[in-house]
Length: 330
Image (cartoon, rainbow, N blue to C red; front, side):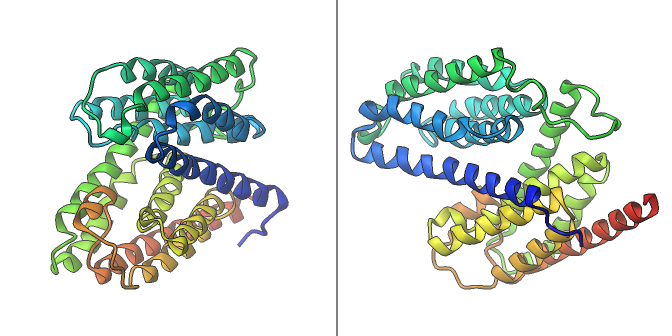
């Protein structure tokens, strides 16, 4: 396994920092909402978020804004109306296009989202100030992103393959492939949610894993690696939504291993999935079927073990193939 350089360690720390800011801000907004001070805090929150991310290098910052956009904008009115699914799709699409095509898509969705905030909707009492607060907060971020883009800060930050690969030559095709990858993940989550409560899910776990793997075989290697980076991080979040400190720490570990698998060696992914497969076996009282449907995790621990071990074995094969390819070119 390649040695971990200081540069790669710094990238991991940047990723963990960006994740901490992203998740931490959702808790901060939730706290302000509960305390009914969100309207007062909206402008300071927007400025604070900008300051927390503004020091990051261009590529790291663009990826961080992509994550923040999906995490914060897509869940603002979660569960309040069926029309929110439309904005969920628009936000995710804009975030993907912003990372793989042009950062202007990110700025645009932060400018557009305030208009969405003006649509009348029935909200719980403690969210009464949410639309106006979001309008203020969104515009602060939108103006900052537009300013940075106009200054050329994100000029070379868009994610492109290091060498030419089929299907990935333009921003449009990279975005479409990323959307296709997202569809694969959504289908997998839905399928797992359907079977996760049944004892028979043990027998479905390996076929679902193999189906997921098969759905990614057509991807170019660089796109395939992005998929497994994202899905490794998503898997690490399986139990973290409970808010328990230990689960959040394990999520952080999975994020770190996911980045190392992408940047250094896919063997780190093998370790991540092997570890998390065993992590499934711990008893957890906070699991629910609703959470399984949302996160796509297996309610039967052994099923989760089988699913993740199957993927770990595939990633081991992929890592060995990559190592042989690198050795052959040296």
